[in-house]
Image 1 (cartoon, rainbow, N blue to C red):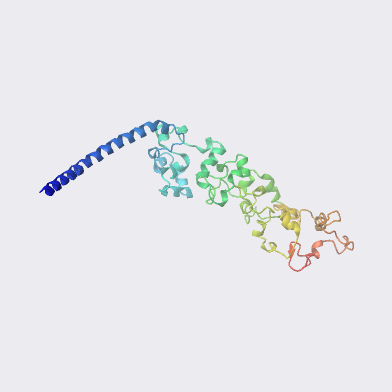
Image 2: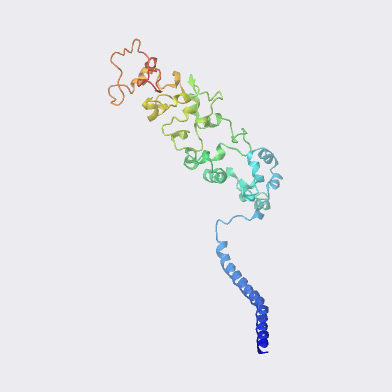
Length: 325
């Protein structure tokens, strides 16, 4: 009987604990909530001081709202690749439509079209414009060196060449077609392409961007090339690429421009000088230790008037060290 009474006492005690436990948990939870609120409340002032706080989603009104006032601009814009951003739900409203570039538009609308409440590209510096464009276009091989490009260093902004709303070309949204766009600044090159012998840029068979990356490269003159400045030439002139068993050293050391002018020349083959021998003798004289001079029996006034009549494989040869064949 005592054992039975003891069991009853034990079960009664457990029941009391189980009944009381939820109240304890509720009270603890309530106390935790109060202390948590207190922590967030105390932290709130410091959060308000954060300068880079993102805009609230309610600040974005959507591209269709912009269309109500800017219908003509919207109609041009919806035919461009930028319109696809309206479908980018993953990026959120800050990456969609008009506001993906111009920023949130709620304040602009509330201010009756206040232009100070929206990012207007024409009213900002090249640095600010480029930074905004690079938020989306920084990736990829074309823009890897944009920050170091000659255009960036000369305060040329993206909208100097591109127009998201009024582009004249469907590809790359250029304000003018090449080469006229490039001639806007590089007028001296236009004269070079008018030379008797030239790369057919004005004829539309070659574009400036086939050889140059306007967004910057690691090479000089923003050429799409190696340090020798010849890789871009081999894109078309593949027969000159090699590798050769016997290489003409200037081709590998100085590149194609050691003998040729790339844009245009009054001389055949875009050579720097009209007389081929003079070009060869600029290196092959006795004053250059590493370049053998012309043999004494080479009569420049008779059959040896052009070195390349015999040295036909002047870019390199696999069988002859003197480039005869």
